[in-house]
Image 1 (cartoon, rainbow, N blue to C red):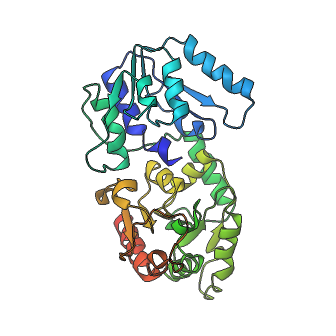
Image 2 (cartoon, one colour):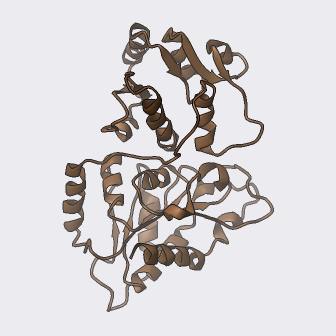
Image 3 (cartoon, rainbow, N blue to C red):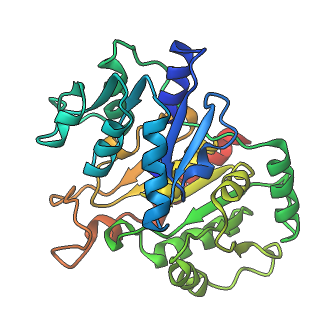
Length: 333
């Protein structure tokens, strides 16, 4: 999810440079909905990741038949390199990787230093002589989707005129998860500040979200009804439209974090073993903030803590995150 969202600035820039060209975007079918209603795209092609070999081969065949003039491979794995070559496009842009790099005729050299995730993709356009511009990521939510999100939240008796904060405790790898007890403590303290809290979850993260809810202490008698609500697993576009009703979103380093930024929500990203300077290319002037606890062994990029203590996550305390949330709520008030 994050990989697709982080390429959206390039979509906008390509349409600026080639306003009369038909711009098609090929992505995994799971994430194709993220690009629907994007005014800079003429077509979203969905690759059936779980489909039959016949269905997948039909996509390969279609790429060949379409006779594209330009193909840019922003992912650069062996399969996408083959897809790019199969287009037969006269101009094929991709990373100068050993072996598969020969399938491109405009090769993007490896960067001398580690750029952030958006700048990494900009290099593909710069190889064509296209200067980078505004790096803002975006997802385009329709008026109907916004209205449906309002109706959905009204069913939970939320007051949409009062502050709503979103918390996302899930992530693919254990090392990227801020402890459930910290999320629970943050939720409790936000309720004490009269903030409505929505806990979001993705597929396979149900146990994590339920554990956070279990650890939240009972609210004070003065707390509003439904102060903390656990949302079900939602389709990506519905989740983004609901995020737009939030005044701040707190998330582990995962795709939903990038979705919140693209939806225009001030987002606090919580980082353990990964590098925020690469994976959080967002500006504090827009309300975004990356938080982490600096220790000697980070960033380790490990999926599980090799030392067994996960101090990079455990020592990032709820008090620090709470202060950042309240600051953003004051900014949005």
